[in-house]
Length: 161
Image (cartoon, rainbow, N blue to C red):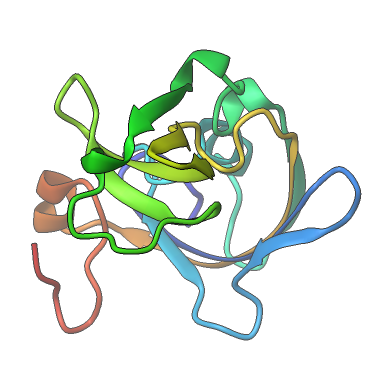
């Protein structure tokens, strides 16, 4: 069965940066399982996998605009420390879940703490980076009606929302 919209796809992958540094991998772990066509993975990788079959291996280079987007300086802001209610210690590298102005959940990273001023960055950590994927297609199957309705695959023991 070939990869197409509304198929549940299992892949083994390694993601590297331009310099060859491994950024993420599923090798040695369970495969990544996603619903094709539901924006579960970056668009450039999803397009490159269309038509591939179980057992195929693919090397894909995804440019920032087809990955996690360009790095946007306007997503870096300085806020008052009071915005981090309940966080006793703040240091560079910490990540927090927040709500964006449009009501969507997002992650911000603390870039710098200077007294009561905290510089945060709402860019994805891989924004602006070219992504190098090495992928092996482990399985392709039809999605269930429930998976299609929810927009993501379910595991063998179902799932929780």
